[in-house]
Length: 307
Image (cartoon, rainbow, N blue to C red; front, side, top):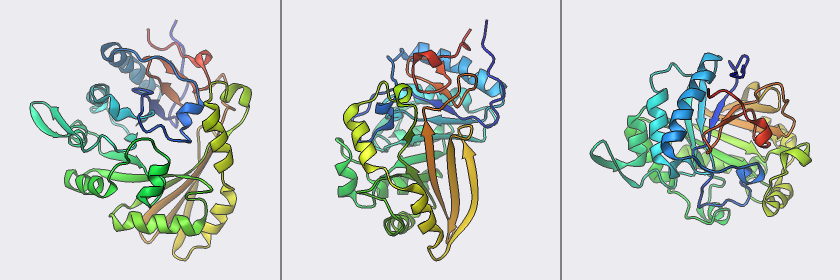
């Protein structure tokens, strides 16, 4: 019997093509949650088609391709874009480090970049992880060479794609309003008009939410977590920073505050994980094993929707 999903009108579908990533960021949230084995591409795409149809029929309209690094599996990404491109979605977006976007890529008999191939299949929104305005500080957090933001921003302009920068707030990196403002001005100098500052996740019910955690990364995350509400109060005092609205997300487990700064959209978000309810889908989580889950806390969260 196929499981009912209820009303998913305001619920995101988070899609993980792979848990593979060479960046190995010191605070990677995926390494603090449960992970599983990776299904072959054909099986994965067949199951995605069913899971996406169930999500759409339940009212869902927002698909987020994420992972560790989703561009490590371009065959899966492009296959999924072909599936969703004809649906009327509010948002289809990829979360990526950007390291593979400008790599030479052969698609449909043409040589271009992977970013070009993704845009040609309908993807227009790229959320780039960039956790500092200084490339050296960004590099400290990653074991792989970080991407060239300037080149990606230029490619996006050429292709008509939209870039949003995602910066994780950390005490020793971007952790206060003055540092955030330097970051904002750097992004604006690249022509980027959308910036998201993400609080390190707050990990409640640790026996459940952290049961599969990389302990070194968990310790780093705990040591780097900032006082989010203090930073938010500081941001509201910045000249020309106009507060627009507060949004609730993940069924009330997250808060996002949206500002306008001289025409640039600035968001600050915080999220508590580990408190998800067993009788509700917090976000439809499509994992590398080709199965759907109601959260990332463990295999017991698996949904029976693929029949």
